[in-house]
Amino acid sequence: MLTKQYPFGAGESFIENEINFLARGFQMVYLFPTEVARGEEQTREVPANVKVAPIFSGNDGGSWRRHMRYGLKALPHIADAQLRKEYKNCTGVKQAAAAMYVEGVSRFIYQQIIQYIDKLSLAEYRAITVYSYWLIDIARVGFMVKNHILALAPHATVRAISRGHRYDLYAYRNALGYLPFQGEIIEKLDGVYPCSEDGTQYLKGIYKHQADKVRTAYLGTQDHGLGSWEGERACWRMVTCSSLVAIKQVALVAQALAKLEQKGLSGIVWECFGDGPLREEIERYVKDNVHQNSVIFHGAVPNKKVMAFYKQNVVQVFINTSQSEGLPVSIMEAQSFGIPVLATKVGGVGEIIIDGENGYLMPAKIGADEVAQYIERLYRLNEEAYRAMRTRAREIWLEKFNMEKNYPDFVEEIS
Image 1 (cartoon, helix red, strand yellow):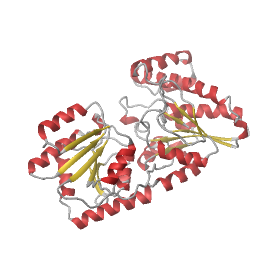
Image 2 (cartoon, rainbow, N blue to C red):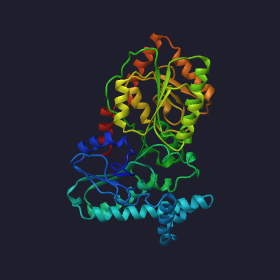
Image 3 (cartoon, one colour):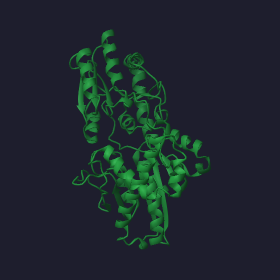
Image 4 (cartoon, rainbow, N blue to C red):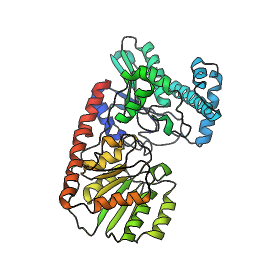
């Protein structure tokens, strides 16, 4: 299995649940986190039959230097037929540089992995799956590794597959409007599993000749039980859990809260989980425009603490204002506790929110006035209707996003 950093760092937290099912479904799992800095320590435990082999290619030199370093590694392969073919898909120097980077980093990671697996006794396995968690450079490494394994274990059934999420799937959402080698990756993989039906239809629409290998595989979250349904009306709590970056538009929640307070709506408390470059700006706005004690900034906290918060506190609504999504795990987690959701209708969000049943879908392009209107709509909902919404939130999660169903089905599919 190829990841970016898991089980190092704090990212890719959703793998923490899936890895347990992979460990049960496979005799052995070799886990290659591919962006680890030298000296970095593993932060999360893995099951006993999961062996971690970090690839030290991380951002210890900074993002710019990393791209330059691996772009230069591609120069000896400038005449490679696939690289020349990819250049034809590039419009401009920046896209060509991105292709060079992916070529260089793919070859580097590939060489590191085969040095490791050449020491293994792979011939004893009848079936081997090379699984990339992201549909980008490491998925390209995946099918390269598959071909190498076939030479080591000619009698084994070997497959290379990848999940797809958001930034690694929707090329038009990328800053360059381009994802290097995506066509080659999808052509050479044996299976591609977007985490939303929206993502599946997007890829099928572009790569029609490969459509039969693209299938939706929802992620899933753990069942912590229902959150508390009862609480003092003096506190009406809304939660966001997101990186504080421009694309997430979390500032809209702060602005909406200010507008609601100006209208006289009382007792609203916003619990903001997450950190990022816009935190100081949002905090300044809150200080100048929102009542004291109406907002609590928790910063970046471990996922377990967020789950404990949902379990121990009454939360009336979870809000997601992002401009772009795959199918957010954060929404799944909130709904598992029976928390209604307000979310922009982007990516696969419409697959988890049924408008008016377990929350409300907001327009993809939205301003603070409209966010405030949606919050007020839920705030003023009568008790019977609100309880029905909480019930449906939990029911839809159980039907579609419970990891106890989704991950065993996925493991069976790829094994």
